[in-house]
Length: 341
Image (tube, rainbow, N blue to C red; front, side, top):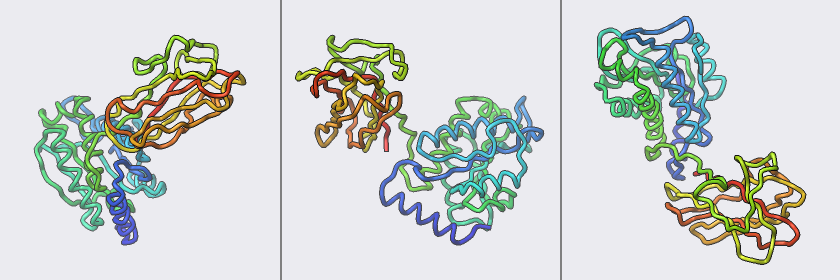
């Protein structure tokens, strides 16, 4: 049974997310439960085993949710048996905010249906109502509707929970889709999109991090920047470097930003005692240019945070590294990363 406090807190979280316009699942824990596994194959049909299909769909959904900043808890990530109570314990003990069980149907029918518990919270009903049409749309299956059932994992989880029967494994048309990696990816996207809609977000595919190395065509440096390979903490196969001087000769990384918004910007450099202690990175944003000076003598071989900036879509927002700083050192141009917020 769902506790009223859980319902109130979950509803408050939904309203908070909607009010601030967040477009990802930062701070949200999603428990994905691929049904059956190990000694329990689940339904079989058309040369397929349900346990295998469930796991692949859940792992694909996991990757998508993680790309959208969710913390994902999986009841299993390989072909192992987990009891029904064990699945509930994993979700409950890890403080999951939502529980999504993924199954395949059998018994001579066709299509997709999604369940919540008849005594579930309003958020359980809403999550069910948002996920089912996404599954139908992405899979191109017959819509069998949204339903309630006293399934064990729906009754014994302490957060809003649903169980989806993606398609019928013993129906030739449905099974052909379950056998297709492309359609299993679509099922993962449907879980993501339905949950996004449930949380009041605009439905979207995750925006992947953008990384530009110095070997990329989106990187530019003049011939005054030499190429080095000896530093073991480099990103990729090499890096570029230049002596510091009072000249305007910046290296430049130019991302193609897919969507306007706030982006975190990180820099990677190989550290060393001859590096500049005040290497000036220049981040171009919608507010103009911001110079961030970093000490490249330390913190090599990792992503170093430069700041969060408002960037527009397109290629008009490069990050540069100038050599115009204290003389007697070199500045290291290696890689830049942008992460959508």
